[in-house]
Length: 114
Image 1 (cartoon, rainbow, N blue to C red):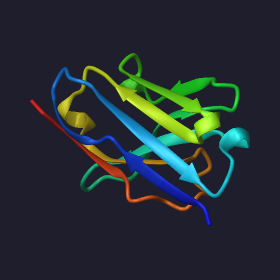
Image 2: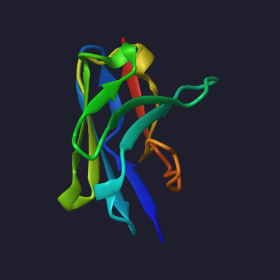
Image 3: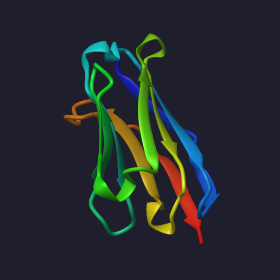
């Protein structure tokens, strides 16, 4: 049974940093492009960052230069380093494959105060 568990969220201040982790069990991530998504209240879920099996990365324009996605295949874990946080980063953050085909976890809440 595939399980996705996100962690590391919390309350941050504008300009601060947070590091999110995503642990996946029940499947090897070696062959999957992985991604972080977020959903703010009243908005649709959006893909924020993705990392290929060869560690190539892509970001939505709003987080470029501030967020860094990485993966550790040996640990079946994906990370999102979030720097220079902004209030508009406030959202529930999820991890999934870039195709969104894994079961969705409960997400981890990030709240940024100004």
